[in-house]
Length: 464
Image (cartoon, rainbow, N blue to C red; front, side, top):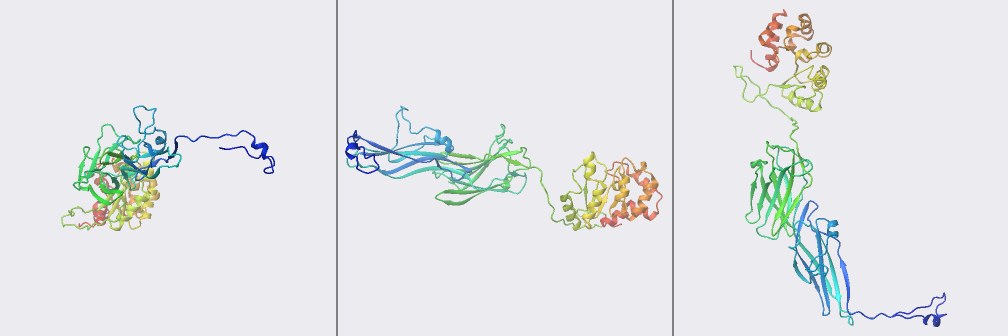
């Protein structure tokens, strides 16, 4: 019941006039209710995971004349959960349904619905004593799966194994934990014809199996081990390498807990398969010895060929220089194509300037430059390479006979016969004719002998 009060600035001055105004009252109802609504609850172990609701428990006390009831809803994320309808739903959808105090199965909910929201209805008809129900606890139970380690953005076929750690929680003694990969496109969709490759760990037998229909893995580098096990679940450590024959450019990764229900998480970002391997040579060892009959011991390395045109490498590339430093430490000879290539870019990658720069960058490197220092760029070679410490090779396809003999004699004299070696380039020219061409230059016999084999034997340490 309530009544009007004094409206003046001084209390009670006009009490009698105001109290004569209309008086209202409110009759006690037969029942009173109130609600508590939760925020969406994330059941996942981590953001890289999924959960499947199993059951829920409503704990509390409802004295005589009172009631405590609950409704719930679920979804794949917080937004969709908020938009979905409250459950349970009876035969007549217009009449609200509830569950009471106790344990309740959530098998009616879809698998992989990782978010839940609930609301609790308090009701009392004991208005005289104002008895109300008491809420103790709401517990949501789920099975879940998650990837707990970082996922590589790229992987190389036939490379060292990678390690993936996953989390699993299941309410079954015969549960299985799985990690799978499959060929995909750049948008992250499974290729139509591809099949999932699956590693499965059996909780019951403590063993793992591999199903690899597309031959994506190297069997000898595949393993599974149990990790930490506690009340939150089981950690699993997976190790595998991709096979060398892998044809796809992307793969998807998926993990699963097969318990009382199936809970599956597929990582949304495809892993790029990088088939180009950057090899950094830290050291090279070669015990180079002759057997007395000019044959080399098995697996001995005596020289390395660089080809800026066919190998698409640049003599000024820091990686090339780094490799040459490692090669030079073990006294291995490098010979490189020099001069004109198939296009302007290829020509620049093997220019006389870059030949000389490589020799200067790696001062202990024994470097040979084909085609007198620059194929079809002899004038540049004479200005830049001739007279340096770079060793010149004599091939000039289709034949050195097209070159002016006086010019070649001048190059050899200026560069020094000790720094010139005979070559026939694949052979792209007739070796016999090219040898005859060297002899036709009329060089001193000692110089001719050096160029036609003596210098190379000395450089490579061969017996003569």
